[in-house]
Length: 282
Figure 1: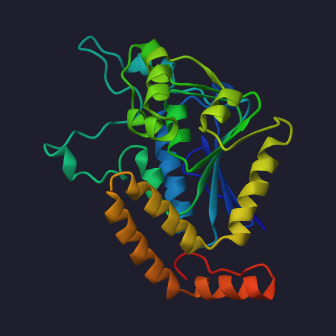
Figure 2 (figure 1 turned 45 degrees about the vertical axis):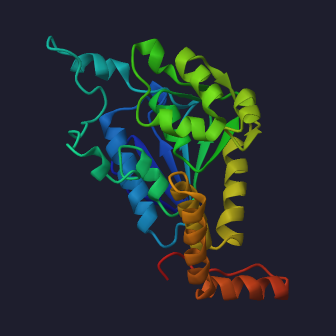
């Protein structure tokens, strides 16, 4: 079954089929350049998918030949004033006096890390600036053979934005991340694969169907509750000691052993059949 969900904006398209939601950045005439409408629309679509019990895996991709070319600089120019630059994309919340009071995983783009479903980024083309940031906050990345990744901030006179200086070194190591962020150079899909930034490079012809095939494996063979636990454990571990991580694992295992998905997973294995797991919240 395929359902086209009502999108919050024309620039974000969301379709659900076979327990997989495909969210598409939909400004192909502008290479999906990022603006405030897209920012609000993407968050609304992701939160809807988070709450939809029929959705087990989320795929994020771009329409046309690019994933996202970064911020819409034509819109940014209009926001410049004589008193200095304002926020170029969206409206930034004021910084609290106590920055540590904020939830780490509920900021401008890091909220993707807190969604308890796998988010796969299908890099169908170029991802630059904020487009690259979005890709890095996804859990899994697949790149089209001709995709290119560009942290263009320094070449626009900007600091590294939106926590990319936090997440990128955790994905590819500090030295490699610094070289890339400081140079702002373009990285090919093949180099990204060698660096471990993407899980695979796929042919451009039939790229999205190939990604959806991989997503279907997660949706049909993997327990939604176990995937949510593994995602939660992995990101929380980035700020934990080994002891804290092990303690969390023990709590997660205890909860899993009480769940119906554990019983179904064992039964399916012994019966040599495909499991029939319940969705989150069931």
